[in-house]
Image (cartoon, rainbow, N blue to C red; front, side, top):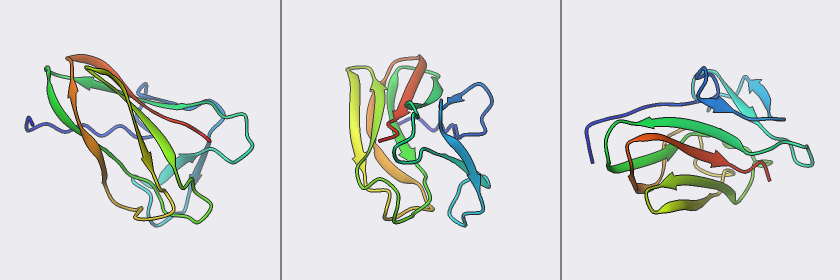
Amino acid sequence: MPDYSQVVDNSTKGRFVAPGWERASGSGGSHGGDYALAKAGSDAKNATFRVKIPTDNDYGVYTWYTTASENASAARFVISSASGPHTEKVDQTKEGGMWIKLGTFEMKKGERTVKVSPS
């Protein structure tokens, strides 16, 4: 993998969109002081993180979330890779407050997305 990193979170201007998600703070395990959340039963749509890939190559994709018993036990992350969308499920009731690797994916240069389902 190339020696390259990029962090996109809920406060990255122009790189994060989450219709119907709420902004929250105060959790000791959040990255950057606050985070976005979709409450069960809300009309929230997918949260989209936009990343700019500098060159065609394989890239590690990670997530960071706060741990809470009311979090999704099978949160779905959809990564736009060179071979098409790839879905990873994550139990967000465990292991939060640190970087969790979703996998390594072949990416093409340009704009790519990681989407998170609110359900």
